[in-house]
Image (cartoon, rainbow, N blue to C red):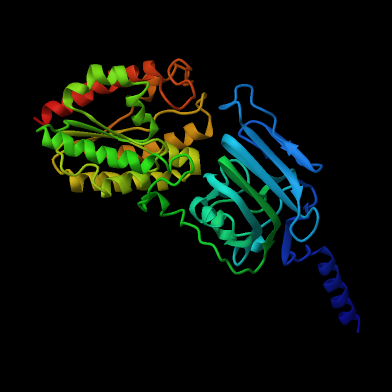
Length: 437
């Protein structure tokens, strides 16, 4: 009897000390944000809480457009004020976030859980759409939903359900999630959101890419700001190659990359004419490209039918800046591109450039990620076909900071930046051209 009493007392004490079982669902935003959280709208730098019926994001000191607007208002789905409607126009980036200072533990929901919400896409013909969840510095995942989102336009209220694991990467600390839901957009559009929940057991009805293989899975660039020009630029490059062949010309040098490489046609135009026009050089830089977008272009003819002596490759900073891919994933994408170039251009030397510094200071997260990628891809050089070159020191100040004179936006070179690029790269490039004769 005494033993039984002691057992019951001990069991009772353990039960009293045990943490409560997690709820079957977390009501992230159901009429109101969950306790300790609020709805916020804004862009990269400015935000405003939705505490009443309407909120407008403060205008930027120097907006990209005088017509830029970001706003949110209370609206209804099943009740008078149980939804929120977000509208935006002429903006590079806008978001509607559920944010709080007290982290929420989503670990019990990860294995079989879902993030579910109702959405009414009213206008997305000129807008973008992504969903994001974040758990601190370096712990976030964004899912691009542009094309499926546009397919929902005018369809009324729809329920979307994503596996919670879509937003989790190995090493992420889901015990401290401070951004359990965010809608990210750009361009112009309007949509409504209601009934945002995290369920312990749910049935997904929307798919997400595997973050481990996204960088090596060929795909066109799918962004609201790129749909109108990305594919036409690809076709223009194919036409330019055909015209060169018909004229009996062949590019001795091909540059492959993203907007930094495309900038040879803009800020770097004069430097290009001075140094590379004599080689009938071809610029295959496309703004916004990730490694998988370049892979798609290569597999669709952009280096077929030509015989460059040297292929200059620099890619990866959008994997870093847009998705914050793990350095190993970005490096795998670059490795895949090298293999593709070697298969299609076996006689070409490959000059693999380290990804340029980004962020004004050397301790910025983007800079650190790029440095880690560079440390990995350095090992891809074999000294015969693939040659690695890091010219980052030529673009930065002695203390590692970036100068606005060289990179006005801390990412894209000015004309001076392109001149520094050419001066630092040319000795290696000319040596490879000489060897390839």
